[in-house]
Image (cartoon, rainbow, N blue to C red; front, side):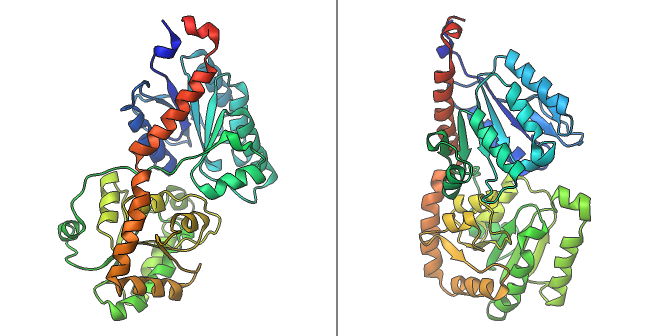
Length: 393
């Protein structure tokens, strides 16, 4: 049979659901789209494990214990012997073992099939070890993917990666059919209140305290405004410091007398709840503290659903909210956030204009669109990587 005609086998090296991790969700969303595309068998996953006892589905072909170097080498040798056409590595420093996740390099060195690496974090000032890891992963790969235009430049100038090897592909956004904003507000019993929201795992870097302080000024002019903080505490944060941050925020709400204007929804949200929380929002906020953040999945979702966004000017927000797609407030500055919120609540016309601009970009970011871009790249690579002797299999 001619190799070029058979369905291609893609394997992801990644964390996997039900592990609570943004990258696991990202991989699952991409994998689900691939099952709908022509030319590919259902992709499988080599799951990175962190001592958790997860009940994986059968899409997980094997597991690697993050801190067990021999697991990496065995897995690579196994996959070399399998019918895998291409491996896709989801890269985030924290999910691999060794210093800054350097065990991953042992894996790629053993690997004899082509691999693509998707960089979820690109640092402008890496440590020498981080620099070495990114550079070597890129050297061995056939393609590197980044999800922000701003990081393409960094990959070239900081890490000296050949520009022809780099692909910029937006962070995907899942499509969920929902009721309208007004209907959802009624369904969730919020009536006609103006809703501001933030979703995602709660952790101190999110800067939620500044948004809460901003609300104390906002409610003087808009007493019905409601800020909803959706999501549970990040599993790693909870393990290390428990609910200290959430408690601090709750105390602040009481102190500022905002019990009727700030609501915590402390649970792991389903994808449907995440999207409903966005669709019912009048304003979506990411008051994050870190300037460096090159990609934010939650901000991508906000853009995908055409929400009006207020954010601090971390790198991804500056890029995504350019062209009148949102407002940027100063870092660690509740007065600045408050001014942005009031500017929008006082100007429905401005809100409508922003929603339209954001939606234009957002519609190109749905997973169904994004997956086609990945598929085209994967097909190209597999086509080039097919040696003549395999074509007669």
